[in-house]
Image (cartoon, rainbow, N blue to C red; front, side, top):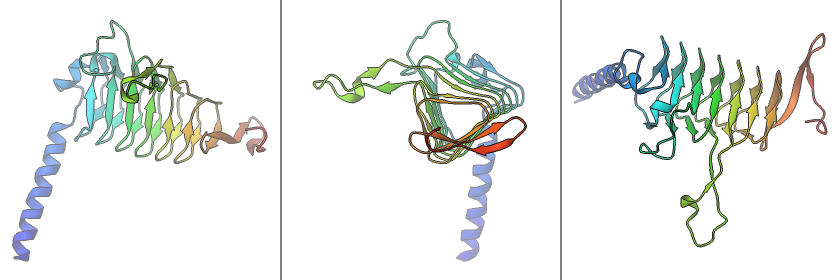
Length: 212
């Protein structure tokens, strides 16, 4: 029976690979036409975890969004946000497998931003002030999130509402970004703090614990 297992396994793998190719969202697909913008050479890989609010999402050119990603604008597919751009992903970005990008007001990801797997970026969070209402039904006011050109977010990074990541920033795996990270820096931890900075004429320098 081992020959039958090999035969069936090969057939299943081939079918899955073909399904992935056919189901990937590219700029010429019907699904892409629902986006506010979908640049040439970009792709959202199959399978998707969740996708809605495309009419408020713009993706630049040459950007690849990995499989099992959640990408959304608004609270639900029926949420009417008006004539606005909520989520912007720039050119030549790579969003890792299993990541989530959730925008309610404004999430901007610059050009040439790469992420590891299972990164979560959101401008929205839940409130908890009303003890008589489930937390899942309470919403805190969204706060814009910005990620600068050429930055790298390591595996499992979480970027929370109000955070701003500068240009050419390395965010270490598992970090939680809650505030501002300056251009040309390396940050790690929860909350993420700067441990290295690039200084013109001196190169990359370590930052004392008290300065981060």
